[in-house]
Image 1: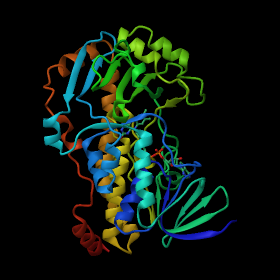
Image 2 (image 1 turned 180 degrees about the vertical axis):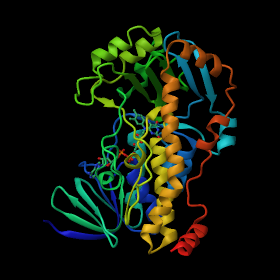
Image 3 (image 1 turned 120 degrees about the horizontal axis):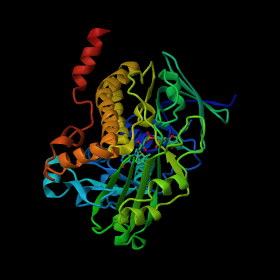
Image 4 (image 1 turned 120 degrees about the vertical axis):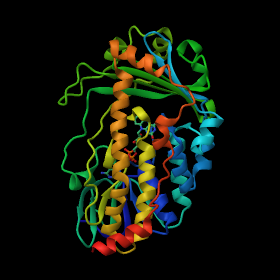
Length: 411
Ligand SMILES: Cc1cc2nc3c(=O)[nH]c(=O)nc-3n(C[C@H](O)[C@H](O)[C@H](O)COP(=O)(O)OP(=O)(O)OC[C@H]3O[C@@H](n4cnc5c(N)ncnc54)[C@H](O)[C@@H]3O)c2cc1C
């Protein structure tokens, strides 16, 4: 067994969630140590959408301006029919949207987002970042939490946060479920230089974020890095899916599924990066993320489908509420982690369900698709009611004093 290091707060995983949590904790004056399995703190070469609730979180983390430097601000979110090529509905993202939600909707390269969080962490007080640290076991005791790494090193912490993603090691300690759930969907994604994107590839209008949807498939494109790159994502449900094998969602299937959409989609899908595929998963909401001095955050806590583009936003919100809770409860770490879970669980489980439902709406075929299009095409493009609860949310432990008093009263 290697050396044992004592740290204040330990975050396992240095992705968007882990680094956001580190920044949030540092802004509350709480020292934090981050362990990342990979040799570097990096994100994949694809885009990410950031709704106003994510902007608010980034603003509180002090990195919004940095992130916005590489951003692209689409005029509209547009939903198109991938088979007919016709419009279904759209959401205007102009002045009225910003007035309503306080922040714009924008898209960035994931690398730019992670770099901004990483640089923010490096220049913040009290954050230590360690790469090449694969946490293989976690233990939670009433007086401390313990993480053991593959290289033999051991960390003891006052509080431990599992921000180690979909396949979280920390989760195994806290939640009694096994593998993430999969319904056979797979995505291919990546960015290409904008000049490679012709209007025949689906971008007649370079300033929109576009989703082309069809039966059990969709194709998304939007500009990133100030419009210099175009992000392309294609997703479909594989008929060959089995939990036991990896031989599904292949390129051949991709070409077969997208053999007869409209011309723009056909041309766009040809440009999508095929080097790697992502099988898509979510989990059922579970309300046992926190025990003693250990908790979960981001995909480790509430993995969700990407269909409403909220996974990273929810992870950032988690970090802020977690830091607020630890600051408010002082020495009572278990009460702080319980308050964090109480605050976040209703919202994150609602977003998990929304992502599933929206996936069903996106991927319906036949008469269902006709009905969806008929209904959605009637809505006004500046009707924001449907997104209000999601985008207007302001992450924080807003009733901190009452919660601390309540916990003391019940103790
Ligand atoms: C195709 C697709 C599109 C998406 N689009 C959007 C979008 O537009 N908007 C949005 O908000 N969300 C989107 N999401 C969701 C979003 O990417 C995730 O929800 C988010 O990245 C989760 O962040 P995380 O930090 O919780 O987990 P991760 O990003 O998975 O980070 C976990 C980190 O922990 C590290 N780690 C894992 N195990 C260990 C270990 N044992 N020890 C140490 N370190 C470990 C990993 O290396 C990784 O760095 C999308 C997801 C997909 C698949």
